[in-house]
Length: 398
Ligand SMILES: Nc1ncnc2c1ncn2[C@@H]1O[C@H](COP(=O)(O)OP(=O)(O)OP(=O)(O)O)[C@@H](O)[C@H]1O
Ligand SMILES: [Mg+2]
Image 1 (cartoon, rainbow, N blue to C red):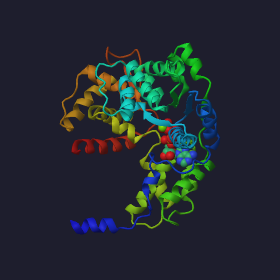
Image 2 (cartoon, rainbow, N blue to C red):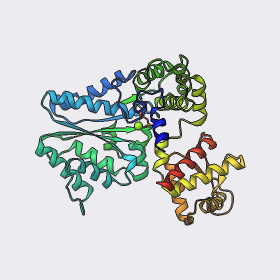
Image 3 (cartoon, rainbow, N blue to C red):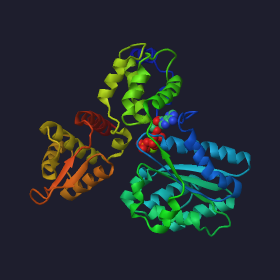
Image 4 (cartoon, rainbow, N blue to C red):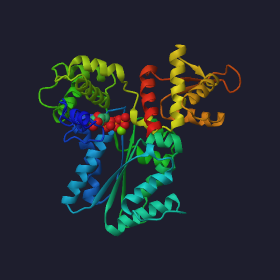
């Protein structure tokens, strides 16, 4: 066994540091996002100069750099403020991970006052406590609410109302709270009241999709940090940029690059070849986001696996709910799980739909309860099946 471990450790790799390709990493520069970073700086300038709080929205489709642009801005803006003796904290929270407005507020408060007991607090009281803390420390807070549109579609607008109102009308001497909302789609504003809408409409930073040449620049910088010198075949970056430009998605481009490198290592090749990019492409799809699949409950994963297999095996585009429930029992048996009730399965379906993984539509046909049609947006069922099977296995063992 020791020999095997030793052998694996000394096995050559094309990577210098593969973590530089992960989506948590904030690279030193963000090519083709200078203008947008400047826009944010212009919006928040007033916070440093006049201590006036601000609200901004960052919007753009998947993988256009919303998250990384906000984080980078937070990092640099707080540094600049510090040089001017203004204390600003930047907190980036992904709302998707929280199920309620209370849990969002609670998590933010805990980062500043870890010992706080919040039982029995209302959301407003949590916010007041947070603001009082910032007042007492003479600090300012920029709160970035990532995937806010998802949170609002699931939980309604309470979080936005509470925060916007307090950012606007603070009872404290200074406005302590600034906000950055990050959304894929501005349509989340549809259900909001007029006052909030007018607050939100002023400062919007749009991130356009990247084209092939922009993606190639991004890849070049990230590849220099992640790979050893000279291991990338000359066609690799242009090919990846071409493939990913169809979606304008930098995340997909970086994932292809990482996978192509992994394949090179797997084949003990010292060069990353275009063929590995093509293979990587066959194994992935830009709309299958692993971190979202990972967060699903075991049961939700089972139900999704059922849908995926059903559509693949029947070669159909749509399945009726009734058919899925039948197959779901079989899949549960395979995984030694007790099938959940009808109502519960409906809840899971809604959850999968809200996550954008499946779509459902009422058809008006079929028997009662069978009349909803389920389909997968344009992701290949086989790729999704493989990913899910792997995650379910990890879930069982872990
Ligand atoms: N201009 C850039 N330079 C370097 N890396 C970038 C750039 N834009 C995006 N990236 C990288 O691409 C990946 C996707 O970016 P990011 O996560 O910010 O996208 P997003 O718009 O938040 O996507 P989503 O809507 O899925 O949340 C990340 O790894 C990020 O670091
Ligand atoms: Mg993001």
